[in-house]
Amino acid sequence: MSRKPLIAGNWKMNVNHVEAVGLVQKLAWALGDFKYDPTKAECLVIPPFVDLRSVQTLIEADKIPLAWGAQDVSEHENGAYTGDISAEMLLKLGCSYVIIGHSERRQYHHESDFVVNEKTRNALAKGLTPIICVGEGLEVRRAEEHVPFTLAQVAAALEDRTPEQVAKVVIAYEPIWAIGTGEVATPEDAQEVCGAVRGKLAELYGDEVSEQVRILYGGSVKASTIVALMVKPDIDGVLVGGASLNPDEFALITRFYEASGGKSW
Image 1 (spheres, helix red, strand yellow):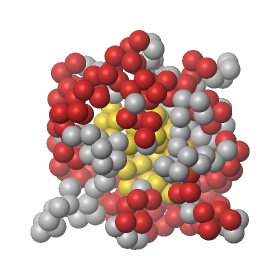
Image 2 (image 1 turned 120 degrees about the horizontal axis):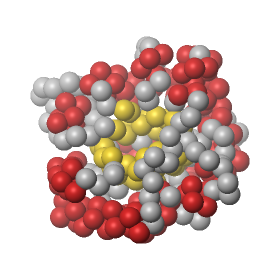
Image 3 (image 1 turned 90 degrees about the vertical axis):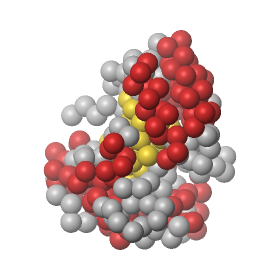
Image 4 (image 1 turned 135 degrees about the vertical axis):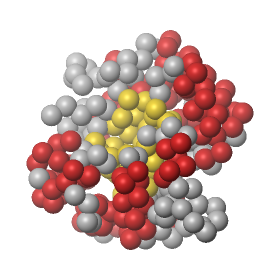
């Protein structure tokens, strides 16, 4: 089964709504200059909440071939949850994706596997595609427990979900020790865990579901490293951090297929 590659740029807490317009415009120009083919890869930008309306307006008005999504969603549907953003609100802003369980949310906001599961449930119920982040810290990697640790996070995030629901999610493997540190997991490191994740999905939900789920790698991804990752059989895209704020660099990452050495997607 063919899985369309997903190149997702997480802007994190950078870029105000005015700067967001300029960034999207520059990215659109760069993609055009580099002859981006949206049939070969899906390009997704994930701005801060306050930028979403500006990004939506520009992309829709100029018919830019980009998708956009949010960096988080509340586990609650609505109500007295000051500061939370509901899935319904994101839908009204045209979002199609939402990041759930990013390592920074788990670390700095103490989000548990239960909260990640609830957010996943809520996103799916409203028709958003969750990008569920999983991955280990350095101490787990050194103990060579990275595979079971990550698979436990996957199972917890998807507990009580149906096979039909699971087929719609995206899993992003992000080794925490390789995020914003300059350290990069080797393509073999990334494939080891991404392959194990696909195997776990097959075990829990069957081969057909497992073959539909896109699995991304995230962690200091650059244009110079993208092709070596994308040729791996179980890596279906990347979750890009800092490099997504550089339009030319992100455009080069998005058109990885031009330098793929003959592999077709």
